[in-house]
Length: 235
Image (tube, rainbow, N blue to C red; front, side):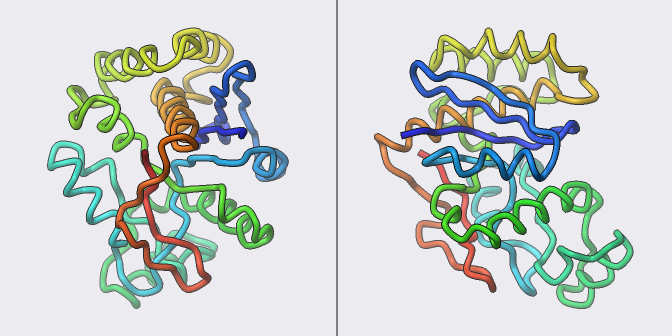
């Protein structure tokens, strides 16, 4: 089975596959390029919200994940826009819609990745069969699992990136080489170091999940208004 991990980056999207004998990476510029690869894999872990609440500001999966990560890392989990605000043309309108439904404003962090959430939502709606193999996950939780339940350094620090890369190197002989090559090929304004390690841990976990099985937060995920699961997938 073919597996991959995908993370958003400033250039577009970074895809990494660590399937034995087929290890590779791709930097995808736009929706068309993303669409062209999503059908090529049997399982993809992607760091992007999929199922969205209709009226609640925060999804159950995000609340539970914050608790599991602990106070130091809970800020890495943000509340995505509610579905009624997803297709608002401006931040002001999305903010107003969010406040009307939840009495809370949409954070700028959430708005900044709303275009990517919208792209993924459009593709999963268009291709109904993809919902079973394109699965939302969260890199910080995956690193937490790789490291036995703890992360020692935040990834906005050099030593945090190094710590994560060392965990990845233990899992794949390609990790260090991919990290180096992608850094050399793309500017930081296009692909950041944390984008690379995040895509790799998503790829490793997607690959592992084929043999070890999937787990979700929460254990029984609720579905959103269009039938997408609101869940964080992990191994």
